[in-house]
Amino acid sequence: MDTKVSKPRVKGYSIWLIPKGQVQSNLNSIIQQISSHFSSSIFDPHLTLLGQIEDDHENILSAFQKLGRSCSPLTLQIESIAYEDVYFRSLYFKIGQSPQLLALNREARAIFKRKSEALFSPHISLLYSFALESEKQAVLDQLRIPHSLNIPIASMELMRTEGEVQDWELIERIEIQ
Image (cartoon, rainbow, N blue to C red; front, side, top):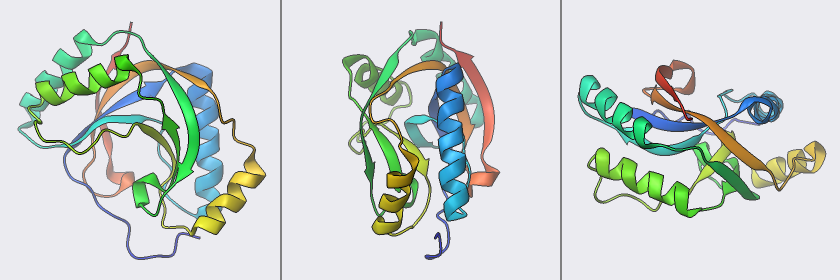
C-alpha cells in the first residue's frame, strides 16, 4: 500500500493532453480502481506535455492559448505498461514518441522558453504511489489492462499543479479540433 514517506508536492502549472470520450472514461475507471486499491490519490487521465511552468499567471495563460491555437488533432499510441520507484510514474502507460507529439512538446518548450529540459518521456500515469514493485505487478496481473490502445486526444488543459494532487485546479481547457 501507499505507506512510504510523505507525498511529493509540486510547483507551478502544467499542460495536459486529455483523452477523448470513452477512452477517457475507461482510463478514469482504471485509475480509480488502482488508486482505491493502494489508497492513493485519484487524478484525471492525462499526458503531461510540459510541467513545472513558473511565470506570471497572465503570461502563462497567454502562452497556453498560443500553443492551443497551433495544436492539431493527434492520437497517442500505448507502447507498454511500466512502473518505476517514482511517485508520479509509479505505474503508467508508456506512450510512443510520434513525430507529431514530439513536435508539440518542442513547440511548448519554445513558447514557454524552456531551453534546457529533461528528456521528454511521454506517459499516462495510472497510479501515484510509492508502492512496492511486487504490489504493482500483482495489481496488473488482476486487472487485465489493455497493452495496446490508441488514445485520441480531445483537449489541452492548463492546470495549476501547486501542492498535493487534491489541490490541483483546471485553469483553462482548449478543445483540439
